[in-house]
Image (cartoon, rainbow over the protein chains, first blue to last red):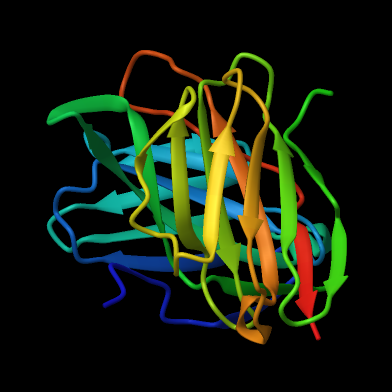
Length: 121
Length: 116
């Protein structure tokens, strides 16, 4: 069962417009969420994150919004640029139990399947 | 180097052969993760190391898969008697041991394995 869902496999937007990538999750124990960007033939690279105690985090053109009651988060890219064309992965973080003790810094990431964003010039 | 380094970047092997994939994490990072992404699939968690120990081996798909980490640094993922379904990109990641609730994971570029 997919605990992190990215229901749109692809998205196409015009350069300069806003890109909105959505992500839903099912496990209320997730306490940290991350977005990664992946170009073809490369590993994912970290983009932006948000703690479950916040509802918004902004970094330049990228803003992540978290709606805990709806178990939904979204990534906004404004303005979109052709270089933003990539696959975007949403990931949710769950603290791992180590020797029956919650270790806050040791985490397992649960990943969505990704959304392929194409920004057209 | 500055990032997570993986080798080989590409490997083509015959079915039934063993393969070894290597990961060199960011210096000082105590946590190391192995993931796999098959064609059309999301990232699949395989195994996680804290130092040299692996408290979570639940993601290893079969007993043909094993991993070790020595000296709290380099890790190797070994696949014995490879099968065609093992074809995937194998991603290694590392993260620092820091305080707070956030702990970003940094990924290598992956080892692309093709079993023919």
